[in-house]
Image 1 (cartoon, helix red, strand yellow):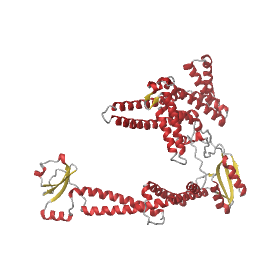
Image 2 (tube, one colour):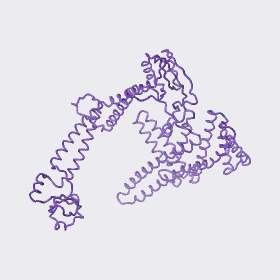
Image 3 (cartoon, helix red, strand yellow):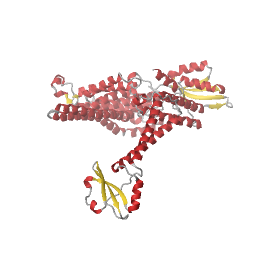
Image 4 (tube, one colour):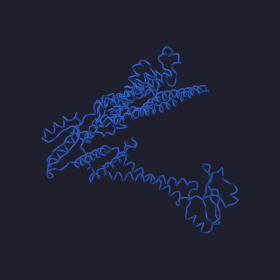
Length: 599
């Protein structure tokens, strides 16, 4: 559900401004309404400081944990400024690039050994010859070149021939393009490379010390800077009244948290006005759901938060999403693996991320149940296995699975329409819901007429009642003529409903494709089992790799396609608007960071 918001207007004496804003930030329940004033020189300065600190923190976290913990004991360096650490990071990258360049140059010179370029120049000056250093694949080396050119082979390495051509005529055409070798000796390059590695080791040692010792200090500095930025932006949006002696600040507070705010305001004798948002205003969105539904909030927010003036659909799509995932993955064995992985990881992972593991467990339970009903266990057809012979009647055939997928789709579409009716009635009045109710009646009656054929004499009449409700109540608020026109145009949506229904065939198709791939893996593994001596090992290896790859691929599809059915088919039939902005109160991040440290 969406938590109702209250709009507060505070009237504060200018001398009490700083204390009031600090107290509001300490309460952490008011989201300041920004009126456009949110950037100046200080804002940009704080944003740059935060960005720089976040970059450093990210670099610290990428560092090898063992290397960070193995810092030299004799190091006792104070925490430098962020700019100094940033310069160290830049110098490290520069040295790494330099080291890579030197390594490449050394690799080019090593086949030629140690020589002095000055000696080469003297030789060329005295003899009038030009020395051209060349290399060529040994398999394509033309032996005639040794007769056609004054040529000396220096080395053969890694399938290549390294040779020097002594060119008498500068304008003579050579068989290939000479190498552009580094103009330093091999020993000089190796010395530079060693110096460079020494610098890298020294910088890494220093940065590892900072990362090991001062990571929390960097996190704390980021939290402090963010708090300063948020407080500064809030101050920029205070209106000045009565010759700047009175200040007016407006903000949103959830109804569930208004008690703490109003107790403070009454205690401090702050003048305020609380009122419900007007239809023109767009308050921020705060979701509140039960433990089960809350697990699916991250999935819903991947698309969009609901608009404040509509329903939170999380509670409505969560059971369907769970069912869809199991249907798409469709293998009881894979479901058991999901349950085991989620359970085992819960012993290791603590904090808010445990909710994702609970979701994995639920996905596993759904997959296990649906996979069992479809008769698939690690690609095996359970109906053909003697151990499951007594349960053959439970397993669904492919035709039955196809029909179930369509039935689930029809149920969700009708349910979505019902949610839309409910939304229209509570937000816009009962007249606004008649057209959507007409679609439900017409759809159910059409199902009976074309498929069920149970009450055709009644549904044959009711289908026209539903059509009439659609046509004559297209948009009651716009007058009868426009409403009639919009209702007629809305009838075209019947093709959209048919298309939506067909989209649910993907539930059947993905489940079957996962089972077929599992069956193929089993077949390949069995064929390899007969290999002498290593057959059993190859058999197990193919099963592990094959089913692992199939499960990962199928899991991705089982997550993506239910999202598509939810965000396109279901959301469309519920009339979902979206575009809500999250509730972000003015609160101290520092306090939350310190609490997480104590935990």
